[in-house]
Image 1 (cartoon, rainbow, N blue to C red):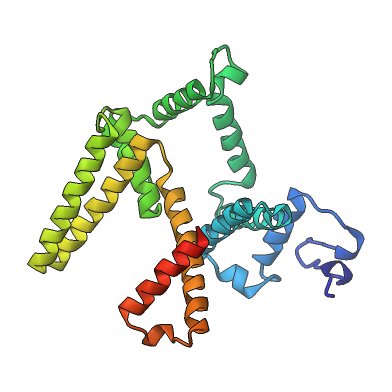
Image 2 (cartoon, helix red, strand yellow):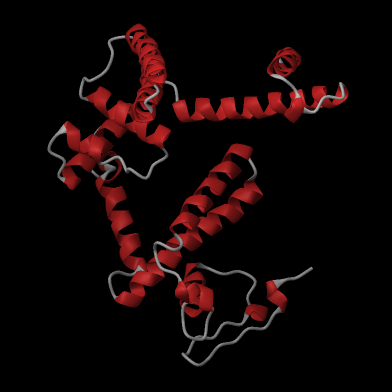
Length: 282
């Protein structure tokens, strides 16, 4: 089995010396030194060629992989994936250190200041009753520091790069804090039903742009229902995806048992198998 600890590596052209044979544990200073070396002329051509935009997607993917490890309850995998997320932080920071814009210590300093400022009940004299008050204080301090002057700015501050469902949830939640929400779940559900009707009208018109618009309104209405029910729409949809995959797998097994090719079967046959799979998986 390949073990990086068995491979002697030493680079001295720029005063950077790393000996993997003599060190079995490393700390953040080692990671930063390795990243600096990889980005140097004596390092790796691929690492040297990257910029913020070229590895932007990597950052997102590594974060999702860490989240998946959490969902699986796999501690060993989480340890690995957190390392990959940390690598992205160090990678992006190294790029800015090379330009002189900021350093890793600057990033840590800003984070520590933020944590101290937003926890006045720990580092100050503020008294809180529960986590609800903690969150309210956090938002109030955040808005003050960022100079947020109105509710619209809080909605606009939700990153546009968020997955659409996650973004819609946050926008709906912040709008609700401003009073822009349904008085009850019945009102939210009624609006959802209205959006279904409007989508059907757009389908009958055959205008694809209008269909897309109304489909978006329908999905956003689902978010409003989730807001009133205090449910996590992202999590709910994730569970539905898992349920669909499980049922699909059962349908495929049932089809194979009956000698049916799914991609050649008609709708009625697949629907029959789907209902059978649904019954067996309840």
